[in-house]
Amino acid sequence: MGALLTKLLAWLAGKGALDIAIGAARWVATVALVKFVMFVALGAAIATAMGFVLDFIMGQINGLYADTGVSASPVLQMTGLAAYIGGLLRLPECMTILATGWSFRFLRQVVPFL
Image (cartoon, rainbow, N blue to C red; front, top):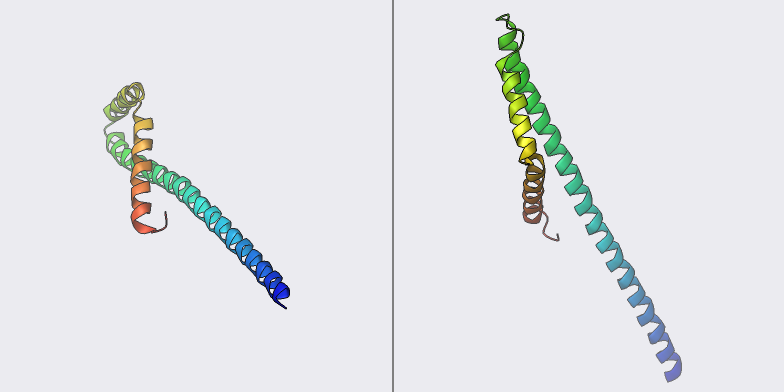
């Protein structure tokens, strides 16, 4: 009887350990998937929102110059110069790093298991 009970308890312990291991692996995979999706989706959303805001502002300013009859607005010329200087200083990469850091800090505060 003792040998049968020992075998039964050993089988149950193995089954329980397997269930715990599978549950832990699923939890780790879920956390990794949530982190990946949130970082990628949040970064894309921030970039898209910034693009919409900039497009709206530039459209409004160019609309003001369209009524004056000037063929090339000074806003477009300054924008081109600013884009050239920003490209030389690698500002898009810097903003990407900053936005990733901000989103990581935000997610760490909102989601407790990250």
